[in-house]
Length: 411
Image (cartoon, rainbow, N blue to C red; front, side, top):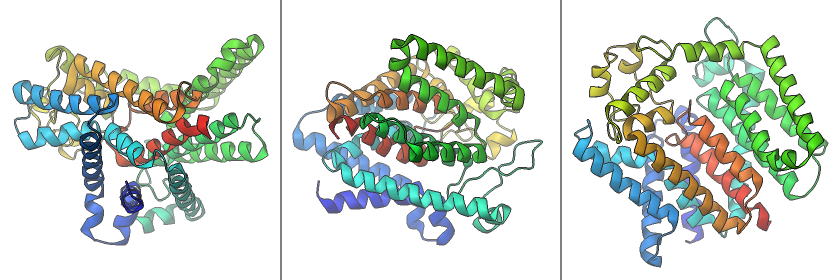
């Protein structure tokens, strides 16, 4: 692929990543369709690559296999009877894997372009969070973004130029992952600059007040350092002590455990006011009711599930969340279980596995960096409470970093 194609692809990626920002600047309809254009372009690239080379890698087989399976079972057994909705929703459900495969096709031999792209993303995002910290609520008013205050609290949650504080927090998680990986790759201890980056990143996560990101940092460190911890007796107990100390501090000085437990307890009833828990609970009911294939594409927790028969069957269709479509797309985990059932869980495990192997074979060879596996676990963890597979912000923060991490063994 030539340089113009790559630049156009990165241009679309930038528009999609900061779509909310660009929509505040102009009313041009181009920004309204940047997500769709990027997905369509990615699908065309993959199709062209397969046809021109006359061979398919495992990830390509998985993508086209899933699309065929999703469309077929949804037409035959699904609750959404609109063919167009079924096809589009099937594509959207695996948007992450499609965009990842297209990025590899375009930038496998042009990783410097990816590095520059992510650097500019970080700089722009950094300016946004700095302005938000300096201006406070004035930034929310001028930029037109919600304060996202939690019930019972008046403190605003910082977003920067993103639309949601969770986006900002996730960007910091991948930034910390990349920082740690760079030092690991150079076989150096973390220096003062590195620690400063990590501390600033943790401070931003606190400003965003995102519980998932706080837990994700623990998962990231555990999987990244596990090989070293496992082989060193003293380090293992030191890490265990630090973990116990951290958990104790969280129990004493924050309401995080109580908040999590309240959400869990509120997740086992159709009367729940915690929408993520409610969606997860209904997904469990669906996996049993429509075992083993689920209710089909576009029928639960996805963009074409508005006025779905599923919501009517559960008697929740008149509730605020479902009328206003607020929070019902947040959990990819719930959507997958509900729409694709038990088989869907297996299929998505295969998709993640093939994606990992695809990055490993194209960039790392026989030995992938420990951080690559750690970041995949973090990504999967975020899928529990965030639309990681379908939201372009999360996807376009993840894919470049996964490629940069996978490429470090050759750096």
